Image (cartoon, rainbow, N blue to C red; front, side):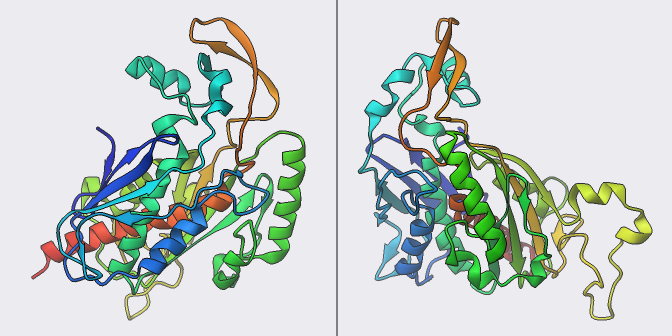
Length: 353
């Protein structure tokens, strides 16, 4: 339960951080879609560990092997099965927390819910599971090729991009380790993260995602509103603490006369505080939203916690961990966005003659 996402275009993932492999099954992908496997691997390379000194130095190739649902490079309409092997586990790095609950991790809750937990890297609760999401998202992107999805790091700690997304050059996002298209801000973020790492601490940040060329009509009434499912998708990503789209929380401080998006004769709007979604349905304007990530919970500092018997103990993080998750989370945000849009695209085809 809880291991599947989507209604028509559906991903079910499996595997643990230090298990043999991670994998998934994609259902609902139409037949005849010619897949670009290089693009799928490129997306995985954007997510994989060891990309820079600012992220975990776990060395995984994150190569994907497709097992079913594809023949001669095209989807057959049957379930697409895939695997990505774990090759660089160092499970001994976690021996010291075998009976200890790390603060702000899933250790305590998993143990109490299931009566057993895989303490090696967090097991199923590890962000390593997002390998599966990126594979499915890379397939989904090819199902909706005209829609452009650009996510980028918009803040780290108290350092924010101070420009609207329309003033940014998204082609610069991949030009730096932070994945920030504002190069001056990216350098400030990088310098800050290096300092945080020296302190043995971690920090959070935000990712902004902009979706362009979205057709009018994606999203379903009441419970399956486009922004509701996008929010669910983003909040399912490890370490995410918040989601806002369009004017977001700032809109709650505005008057309606200032907030309303007035129409142009062609149906576009003069402003876009709605964030491209009205009534839970895309209106053809850019969809934009922001996702907030908490600081990484594993610190290279000593902290007090408890063991499985409730005894207070002191612990300090070991192993290979990110100082900030947002640079590697950019392709994950894009992948979940693509899966949501692909699913609604297929649902929309069923509701129109």
